[in-house]
Length: 172
Image 1: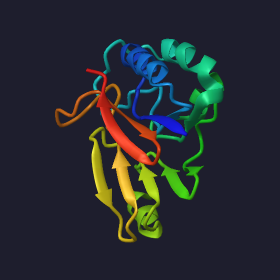
Image 2: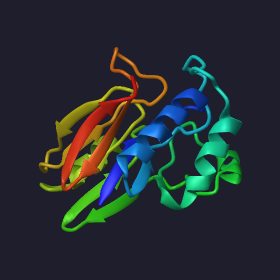
Image 3: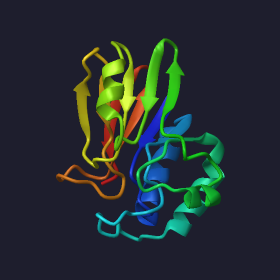
Image 4: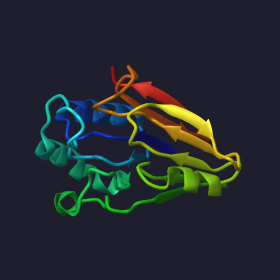
């Protein structure tokens, strides 16, 4: 199984378009979105080409290939216009014996990480900064960064999961 993992689009049509071009050229089986899809949030500046309706039009045709979890900026109103579920707080993908947990990261990051064990992976977004760490039980904790509003000079980023390995890439 090959996964394309991204977070924090925040309604940027420009970066959503670039992300989808990279997704299509990656031949990934699924597009995994770790929250904050349409709205930019009151603490963030408007991302380049902020156009949530365009993002909706780009993502909805791929609805059957999208696995998403809810971010702190995602609402019931967003769900009304998207053709794939976005309101789950957590997700789980099983790849053989590997369990890949999905959250946005604004809640339960530390408590969930403490429950996971060696071989498990916890993917989260929210911080807009790519990172990799280990939980107390030995799980890997990974953040791809942000597609549209990267912080700490990290670049407009996403990850690929294939054959048990994660790799980080940028849209820049």
